Image (tube, rainbow, N blue to C red; front, side, top):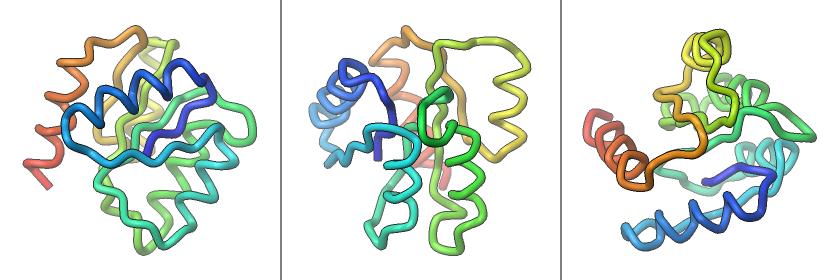
Length: 119
């Protein structure tokens, strides 16, 4: 699941992940991310933007961690804000990793595989 309010970023992420063999589901903002989290769909992992309309990445992350069927789903926060306080808040909220935009596609895929291999 890719949750990001920027169409260009969603498109780039979808391309990267599809090329690596993943099936991608997109959510266009925090509110759509909340709906996707409530659904019965299976997600191997969730890429979540930090700042979005409808619900912030931290709000969606809290919903994920409070959900009985999503609590263990790996989450990587992507953000243009790379401040230590944001990283700390994301990791304290239960994110498995935190990447700042712009990001290296190879690094993103490597981190995803690392997280999936350890879960």
